[in-house]
Image (cartoon, rainbow, N blue to C red; front, side, top):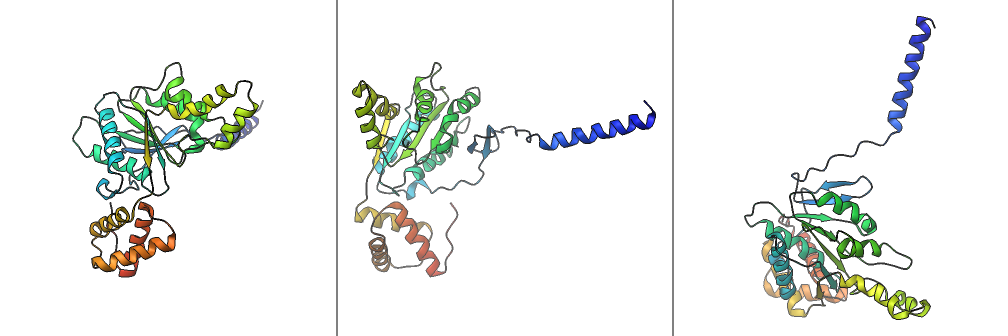
Length: 291
C-alpha cells in the first residue's frame, strides 16, 4: 500500500470515527449533590437535575391545615435527625396546599442548623417505575432524601404501582434508611374505584385482588387528609398573603373582593387565595416579594 493510500485510509477512518461519535448519546453528567438541596430526577439520563430556585411559599403562609402541618413537620424532623419516620400520603381537596406544604416543611427544617442538609428530590409520576434505580443511586450517598411525587395516581392497565410497592417496603432490600417517600394525591387509595371493582369481578379470589390494589396505600404509614376550607380559613389565607407581600389595600375592601373572587371561581382554597393575591397585586401595580 502506497503512502498516499495509507493517508487516504487514515483520513476516512478519522471521518468515520467522528461520524460515529456524533451518533452516540452525550455522556451522562455526574450528579453533584452539593449543587443544591432540591433536585428533579431525570429518569432517561439517570441524573439528578439541581434546582437552585424552588417554587415554594413560606410555611407561615400555609393556613387552615395546622394539624396536618404539624404532623408532617414532626415526621420530617425525625427523619432528618436519623430517627424512624413514615412514608407520607397527603390526599384530599385540590388547591389546599399539599405539595406546597411538603416543600415548605423541607425548607423550614433546612433553615435549622444541622450537620448535613436534607435533600428533596421530585420524581415525576411517569417515572415511578424507575424508583429502584433512583434508590440504588441514593442509598450510598452521605445525605438523607425525601423522594416527592406530586399528584400520584394510577389508571387502568397501569402496572407501575407494583414498582412503587416494592420500592417503598416490599423489595428484598426494602427502602434505604436514608430515603423516605412523600406523595400527594386527590385519591386516598391512589387507584380508581372502578378499577378495584373490576379486579373484584374478574378475579378467581376477589378479596385477594382488591387487597393487592388497596395495599399500595398501606405502604404509607401516614395518611394526611386535606379538606375544603371554610370561609374564615380562606380569608385568613388571603390576609396572610396580603400582609406578606405588603399590598396596599384596606381590610374591608380586601375581604369583599376576596369573597367575590371565590364566588366567581365556585370554590375556596389556598390556590384560589393565591390567585386572588396575584390578581390584586397586578391591579394595584405592585410587585410580589420573592420567597
